[in-house]
Every structure is written in C-alpha cells, then in structure tokens.
Length: 173
Image (cartoon, rainbow, N blue to C red; front, side, top):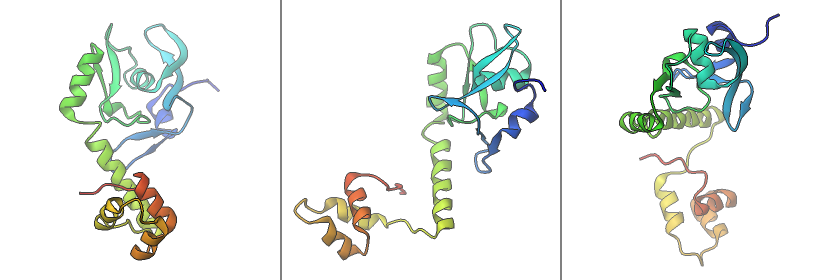
C-alpha cells in the first residue's frame, strides 16, 4: 500500500462534506487547528507533510502553485480542503484584500456555522433563549442575584451565569 494522499477520491474519503457550505471538512491529522497531509509535492518531486490547502492544491491540480504564490481557502473554514474553495495569490496583502472584498470570514462561513448550530439545537430539542430575555438579564444590576433572575425568567442558574458573562448566546438579529 502506498503511503500518502494522491487522488481527489482519497482526499474526499477522509473528509466530511458540509451540505450547506460544500466544504470538505478534514477528519485527519491537524497541527494548530490546520490540516496536515502527507502527499506528493510536485514542486520538489518528493513526498512530504504539507499544510492542508497546499496539499489539496497539489492533489487536485497535480502541479505546484505559481512561483512565489500562496494558496488559501476563500471560504474561510480552517478545516476545508475542497479544491473548488482554493485560490492562489501573489502575497498575503492580496489574500487579505480578497477576503475583505468577499467578506468570506465574516459572511458565508459564520452564517453557515450558525445554521449548523441551530440545526444541532433543534435535533437535541433545545430552544434558544429569546433575545429580549438575554438583553434583560444583561441589563440587570449586579446586585440582583443570578438565582433570582433564573427564577424570574424560567432558566437555569448556569444559563443566567453564562448570559451575564457573554457566553453561550448565538446572536441572531
């Protein structure tokens, strides 16, 4: 058996496809939250461990990126290895400009993640706390105890504590 990823089918087999965003979410090894793959580097003509986007680029195009160019994901999802979501640019500044213009990090990816969270909540039978209740809890003076707020709004003490700390609330407006 040959070691490493060499084909798109092998790559896709190690990923879970997100139906909403069409991202191929890597299920293998990571380093610092970024996928790492052992594959053929067409620029060096040797197998080595490469960062996920660069490895997916080599696998899908069977060629290295242009000399001096960087490969990045335009979807903004750190685990995505879908070759259709990969782009190459000449510099980090050009990548930043592309991301700001496309708003990929604050737009599509975040919206898809929020949709997935809502779907997971619905599957578990969880109901999000209404925004008016969250605002009322956050506006309550510090002298009012969390336990009294929990009783007032019919929530658990832990939920009130998390709302007061600014955690656990999916902002939907």
